[in-house]
Length: 198
Image (cartoon, rainbow, N blue to C red; front, side, top):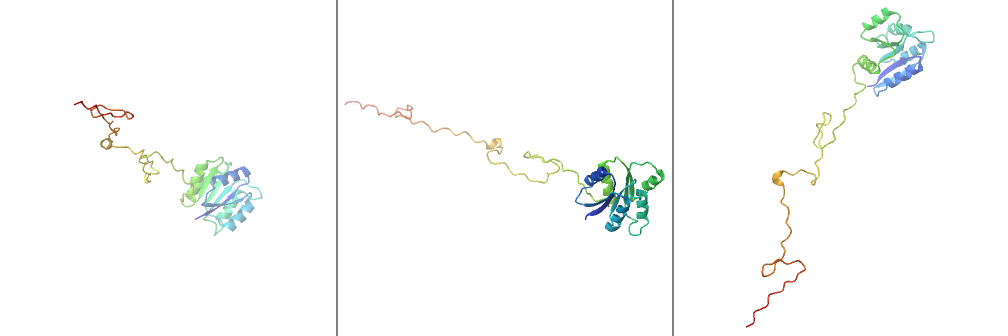
């Protein structure tokens, strides 16, 4: 299931950073750079999450967009993440702290922490899986990741041989011998001994 997220941010660098941080097959991201256009986009898309900057151009700041969302019957339960460098209005930040569907994040933000909060507000779905550990390739060694995998047996030549299976070395064939029991060389002709005279 793909979750719809609307980001309302007027700083292009932050907007691009959010696009990279939120990139996932499980998220469809929509962006606006001012409060009025952002509110129109929210009403059109009906997102699962809104990421909202406090300081916005166009005559409508982030708090005004937030109050409008909470006053709309169709949108009032939409989770909102406020992104800002502003430290004003501490009472509103405190209200966000006690809200299960709102989050106040101060820039610069931690990308991994923001991802965890986005996953939480979108129902706890794992949108960014951690990388798998490297797979051990040596024969007979299995990591946690591939302990259920089977490895191909080694070829016959490299297969270890048990001590009782070791073959005796093959001896060369015995050299031919002459009738008197002496060994002859391969090129040597065997000459019979002379017969005694009568």
